Image 1 (cartoon, rainbow, N blue to C red):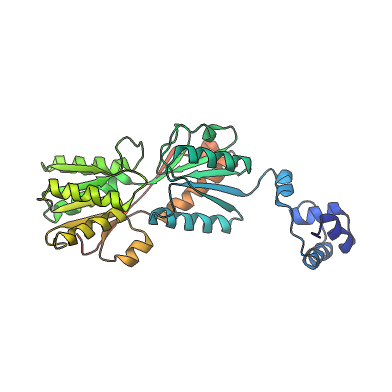
Image 2: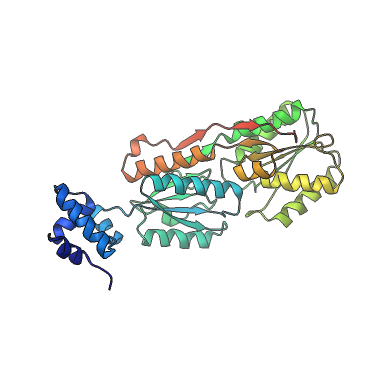
Length: 327
């Protein structure tokens, strides 16, 4: 049978209260007594009841993470860093893939609240989900505007859009296409599109933006890219809002026997480790993914501790361009 706290106390020759103090690091317990309790726990293969401990400490040390999909390299790398950084602080992560479905996100948020998570980090697009507004629930959004009260952590999307567009212009591109998500999404990432359009207008150049549905599907991506190339055979530059779209652009360019970078120059966005390993030639805008993860956790922990006065509504982290042979 599974060992109980009372069994540990009996074997160690101490009271159950002393065992509890030892496990929770509360009150004075001599080193000799602590060693006896730990030895008894090991002998009985006893593991503390996390639920009982959370009732005592009013913390579960569980963090919820809701993302559109970890199939996207950006979110996969973000998840890696969040889980790794949380583990270093004794926190466990419950991962939820919502596929940007609002009903699924509602269900995940409700499930996380039922499991009494200390807080939730959200990277999905859906606004107005009532569960995020529940009292005493700490929430941080990554590159998303969820409400006027939920803090946001993002990279400098406008600067990233400027860097990408300016690089293509500096390389002599006159007919640049931009591929982005739906315009109705109220996200900081829309600033990439604004920067693209602002710079193209400032240089007196035509600009064309094509929107892709979410979650991204490669067949859908290719169909939109093919239509864009058919409608603009003069295209000589592409700014893609993420590296996976850039990869699809390069694929389609190959099908059309377009030489990169001679006939077409391409710049992506995100700069994840996996894409840089598979496509080291891709010129891309690199987001500080590990810093985004670290900052989101720091903001969330401040919320959990009630330090609201120290939390900025939006934290913007710098980006940089990584040179490759595609632009």
